Image (cartoon, rainbow, N blue to C red; front, side, top):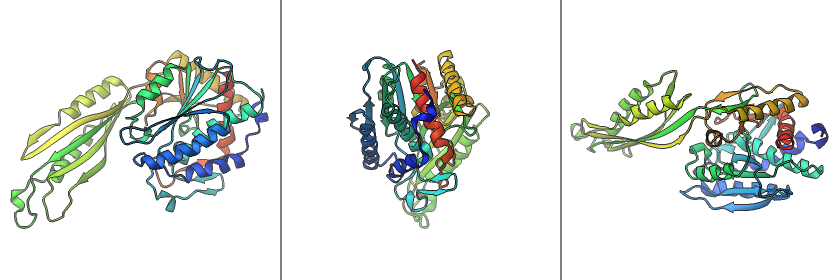
Length: 376
């Protein structure tokens, strides 16, 4: 099969992708994410899929599981795993609208990871239109909560992965355009400081500021960062009235390590920060964790296959382990051969400069189609 003959067209892909990007779907807005799932469901059905809608839980949106007709339906095959939630709140389109500027296409979530997910559907659709049946059955699973660590759908992803031989994750490509064959461990923490309220001008000395205590702890936490384990405080919320000494302040911390042992040590150091001192109670609670995914020989064999496909298309595909966890952490750590970050090339994900490179659309659609046809 000649991949170029499948007829992928960047203009057609952009036309199909635009409604996805303009359907804003921040993780914490379940209704918005469900609207995005509706759009994806339509395109999956149009590509020939049978759909199962899975209700959301824990306050998050629902998921979509799609299976395509195959003579070996129900047997272990290929799972394409992606998320449709983004970090961008509703209204981001006002400052980051869908627009095309030369080789760049801008929009909230276009890089992470709506374009890659759309290309996966397009690859399956073009193969079906050309009359090609993949050696293995294909399942697509879109989930709603990856950007906050996948607290509500990790079990769903892992159970689906167990039913399959391979997992493909169309997250955006690495900075050099390469794939990801392993990921670092990530842990999240919730911090809470509880102080004593008082009037900030009439009785300042009677209060115990939760915000001040949190500020001191933030400096202490970020100072824990080493080359082996990093700590970053990304969310802080505290106080309600400027004329009141704050009695509550909360924060969230992200920690990343290349080795599980380093993360485990970091978790221990974080939890040890819980204390009661100076009239303020400080609590550290561990939340979701992504395990280290170290590449297996089977995953590296998948990469070798992908590199061969890439050479046929006309580019060299590199690979390596990476930070910035994904749901590939889970499937890879389970020992299921997983190839991650085979989606589009781009820049500025999670920022108001998020964009993709248009010349990567056909290239990456062909790569996905080639993998679906070669994995057996």
